[in-house]
Amino acid sequence: MEAVKEPEIITDKNQMRKWSRAMRCKGKTLALVPTMGYLHQGHLSLVDEARKHANLTVVSIYVNPGQFSPSEDLSTYPSDFRRDVLKLLSVPGGVDVVFHPYNLYDYKTDRRNVEEKEDNVDRSVGWRNLEGGGEVSCVEEKGTGHETWVRVERLEKGLCGKSRPVFFRGVATVVTKLFNIVEPDVAVFGKKDYQQWKIIQRMVRDLDFSIRIIGSEVVRDNDGLAMSSRNVHLSVVEREKALSVSRSLFKAKLSTTEGCKSSKSLRDMIIQTIEEAGGKVDYVEIVEQESLEAVDEIKNPVVVCVAAWFGKVRLIDNIEIDI
View 1 (cartoon, rainbow, N blue to C red):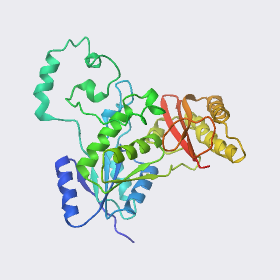
View 2 (view 1 turned 45 degrees about the vertical axis):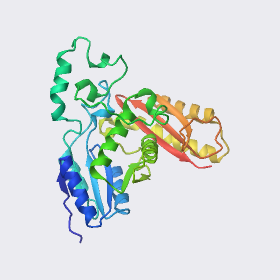
View 3 (view 1 turned 30 degrees about the vertical axis):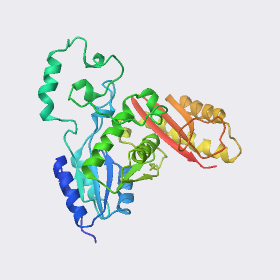
């Protein structure tokens, strides 16, 4: 029986970089699995995939405030670090490092400048309006001094980017920070967050990161629901309603094999299925797999992407259709 491998826990970014560079000097290759914690089997499948592509595996656990607006669910996002470590101990072969930073936007040397700026602000106006209005992230609202953002301008506009305008800017920025700290050879992302996966691929290409980005397939529970850390917030009734998402996606894929190529017909069917189950649709889009541009008729490989609310929980899911 293989012994349980306990990972090294690193919380300091300089120590993390030092460890990675020491391993590189020994000729080791590194794989990174970025997560926001509250791990489930979907995350563990990413770790399994990462282990196939490098000598050493690093899992980062960090709930990134840069991708949440002040009105979103940062404060309620599930978190249990001890539970996460125990989950990672169950992975065959284990992981080598868990990188668990406290705050990647804490610039202590800049604090005086931030405080001076805050002292000169009419607090009745609020940070949101300092830069001329518009949506801001939790990082900006708190005024930590962070002002550099990475944007993948076209790919971030549609799908989840429509209703969450700061989300992908925050994702691209924190992933860039993690890449610069961990310096991996390979990074693995789940295809459940399809737009996120494509954005990171494009960012790596455009900015010449020497990192291979691997997309891992959607992992589902036995009932078909795509695994998500947010699923824990679903009531029993809401979870049953949420099954309408995967059910409608599988039905849409089957319909294409039977000859239906109309995006409107497939979208209408998915929306009707979800709404009849009691869900509230954010969007249903059928887009080309690389450009993420909407198509009227399915002639080339597409992905059907869905976001819907069940109670206070927003879930996303998708299915690829290869023509």
